[in-house]
Image (cartoon, rainbow, N blue to C red; front, side):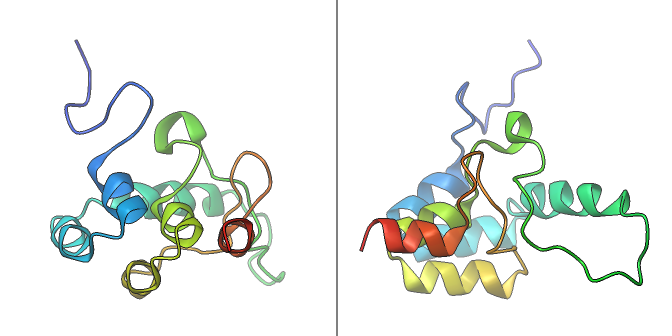
Length: 115
């Protein structure tokens, strides 16, 4: 009851799977159907609490709510596996490549970790 049918118990969802496997067609289809908004909304919610808008924004922030979005974003998975076209698709939708996972790694770290 209350389970999200598009998301498994461990927070694995179709967009994460498609990004991890570099399936560009499925990523495009999921973006078209707004599956990526889950990750953008979490980031926007975190930024609302910023005290001073004139201060330089810190882009290096942890994944806002790992319980809701999972430990890694689609961008983390695509970067880790070297799926460059998938990364570009996600960047085009303004997903933040500088978000850190729960271990403090961003997408650049992920890309270097598997090179």
